Image (cartoon, rainbow, N blue to C red; front, side):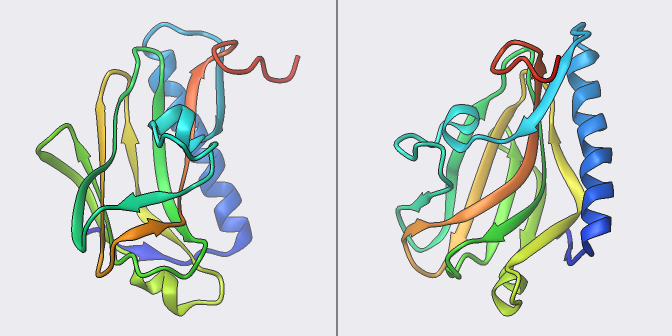
Length: 167
């Protein structure tokens, strides 16, 4: 199981800049020169329907809910996840990232986020999905229902696909 940690604000900024470069490089490697990196939009980028791009994960049962997020990335998009923020002090205990149906890329025990005033924890190792890969995110909690859990991360895509960026 991978670890989670707390970071100081200056450490978060440095981490984010590094991850933006890494995820942009994954799209540039597919031949796209002008790449934009932006925050993840839950509905647009991950297929969380009916959320109006707000972070709301619906768990249909107690325990591990597989495929709460299931998305095949296009040939020109990469995503990196680097932490979670628990918005409503819900009871989510684990987040598992799978590549496709079987390969577990990372598993994080995130209950630590419930014990802190700032309910944000960062992954010691980021979870990167490259173009054409299948993202599956599984969520575990002792109760079912809607959970306001933000998956911190970035999307890299060609300039102009969703936004033009600064000119």
